[in-house]
Image (tube, rainbow, N blue to C red):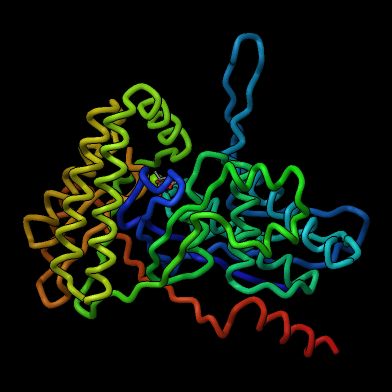
Length: 374
Ligand code: PMV
Ligand code: MG
């Protein structure tokens, strides 16, 4: 039995703008995981088994007289896409296809339906690709793993930045500039997968960041789940209708993230906090201008409380529910924030940043696997 895990994530800043090629965001990986285990099947049937996905539903809409299924919120779509892409890659290494059972255990989708919005579709994609690469003895480093998982995820969701996949692959704090997905879609038509993985991807840029010692990250959960893909669809309409305002938002967001990254380089918590506040305002403005409820009243309350006790707060990710984040000096009494959140029905998620040792990359585990099976 081969087992691999991939962490969940949260956006710190740069949401929505990062959907555009080359625009940056900052994310963190968190210590909640999706685990994928694979074993050879005993018969001619392969199975995908998951306790958490038992009650999943499929959403569909009517477009004229057609029934259009939205597979983007269904975890099985990501698992199947991860299998398809990894097997395509395995074939370029001359591997023989096998029949196997996949077991998925997700701490990011709890069985009682509490969905925190910590990037479960990205993590399940990364965990599945990682485990299958080991199963087929494919030597992949983090960059290759990111590209495989990004392709698998992109071919299901289609409208995301893939920043969540990057956080799940690289771990820790990262700055992420999204790659040109139109370029990728074109190359997929006529280049083989191995060549695409070997090429540098236009606009892609991922950098690990080091957080200042005194930066404490607090995470509050509003209790209400939100659909990222549907919120991004709505902002795409705004992009078409109000092009100048949208451009303005993009430019401001890019400058803000650049200043925040500088803050990380200088280990300067005050700069990071100021830019979190500024990014919150930009996103609030985007929400107001587009009519999309990004900062819901629960998220607003979450931010107000954190600000009252000296934190810098904002919505995290697409908003509309899910989580908010706070950067606060670890030397202050941030317990007051947590107490006040609890009184206001905001639940603290007591998670820590998860770092992934590059020495423990999949390449290393493939080598271990090879030596242990000799
Ligand atoms: O809500 P989340 O955590 O899935 O974040 C979405 C972030 C967006 O920038 C709005 C979309 C994306 O794919 O980057
Ligand atoms: Mg979300």
